[in-house]
Length: 193
Image (cartoon, rainbow, N blue to C red):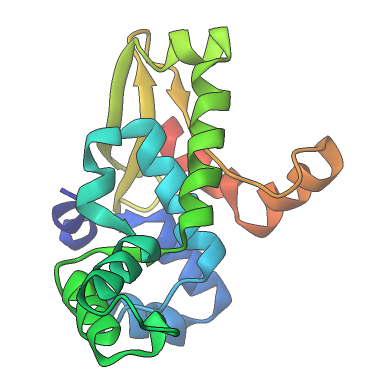
């Protein structure tokens, strides 16, 4: 599970990324166990990631605000502002307490288009049908002796690792900037052990 991986042994890329920002951020997130609230863009990226690699878990982990609004309107068809109602807030809290991330219906539509784009691409579809998704990897770093860990998005039968990324701009110039900004090169180094 995600929880077992995140609470498990070893140093992860995300821990090093937090430490690179400031040791205090690392301490806050990984020693004290606090969880920073991600951005909407991060939540959408996570949704797309889950839909591509673990589609059977999407409805377990995510819900559309339209689903909650529909329940409010069933209870009160005359509601002019369903998201401002007490019932909406109660349902939202209930969904979130059950571990669901709530996103707008338009984000689910965007996700469906992105997943369709991946699975209608002949090469991508073929690659993502011949391996294992979300595989935890552990190794001992030869220089430091530290146990390091990574979670490969997808490992092909021949051992090649596929890392699924979402981006606003996939042009070589912009994506190379994303590689640097999000430290994907550090993540890749973890996979090479």
